Length: 382
Ligand SMILES: Cc1ncc(COP(=O)(O)O)c(C=O)c1O
Image (tube, rainbow, N blue to C red; front, top):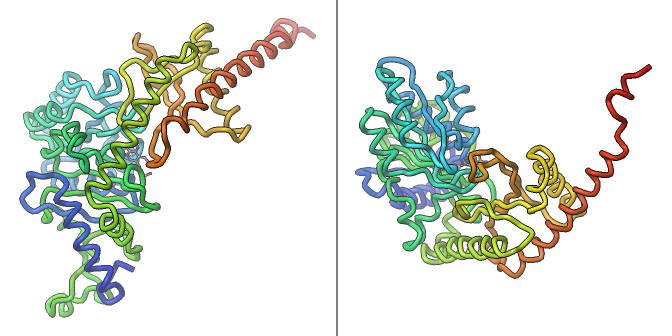
């Protein structure tokens, strides 16, 4: 367990070396970066808000985030006793900079934290980070970026520019059980300056007595909100050693390329529609065309039914996401988040016909149910 040095001397060294490497990934411009290990994106976001709250002066911290943010941002504010976050509208799945500017202006005078997302849960979109950082700075707001999904783009020289602007963040959430292929748990919270972790420091004589620390035993307790914790850095270190940064980059690039190819196949399929705006990182949103031939409500019901049919038949497990349809309306989409580093596009193509067949069945079943439905007037009559 990583709560005291005497229990985990070897794991302590491994964690120190691994987090030092992770800290160098981002934020690159930071003077003394650090990257403590967490249990996942949820805990990273919680600790980010906690550290921001502790840095805030002159009133309760106001969190401002996009409508595309992960639910854990809202839950973290709730757990920390902060006012509910102000939610900023998005355009095409990304935070709208003008709306962000207006929201921050409306909260002038309060300590502020902007939470942007690099790789949204629903669509894989990356908020406009350089613009978001500029606006946050203009309003003297702190900036946290939830890069739980998109963070590993940093491994790839080709893809890392998509995260330009991340270097302005005070804290960044990473979650290597997504594009990092770690078994759960594998969260990381990168901080621009190790001194920012001071609020986590804690003395408990049975774990980090002053005299032990003075005698040179490293103090691990102040690196987490947890006490007992597993040496999760070990498996990360093994992966980094085995694959190297280039090896990880190749896996990330493979997933992105597979998603691009899958997206093109969806787009070319006469009976499927790719969500306008294209794929996001390795996330492909799509719908069967037949779902657009009926009312919005009935169409969304077909999409939801497709997912359940494939799940119940044991054929495929697709995600779902509500997202704009390109005409300003929210619609339900099937979601394929491609994270398997060995899956090839050819492995995924059979999914397209499975989806269209399931959509036909869902539509047939919906119209059969409608035919047999007793009209409401009859149902109410005595
Ligand atoms: C953008 C984003 N942030 C945070 C999380 C939460 O991460 P975890 O489930 O590891 O707590 C997720 C998804 O799980 C996510 O997609």
